[in-house]
Length: 116
Image 1: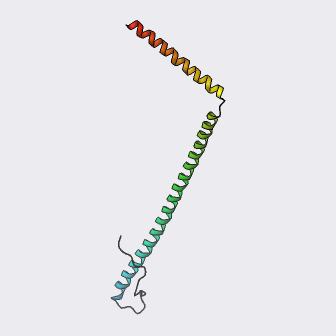
Image 2: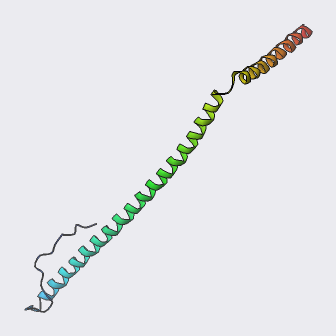
Image 3: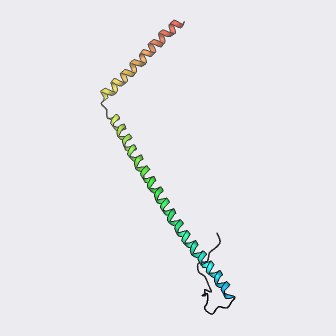
């Protein structure tokens, strides 16, 4: 995009003491001024849209963090609840797993004898 000056020098009216050649100078300066104003307006609109976009991204990020925190708290609560179970439940579960492993070991050894 071409450089647009911040202000325009030699601003003159279309008829105030202008000769026949000054109208073209005036028209050129007017076009430059309109281009400068258009550029400023477009930049302001772009800045507003960028700000709205970044605000929307921030809201989505915050909502995602809230959901994650809620699920994390739920997982931790479940984990704490599992740790606080009475030991009798833990023993009965371990006995069941031990008896199952003993059964598989016994059946495995008898299977080896048959194969020999």
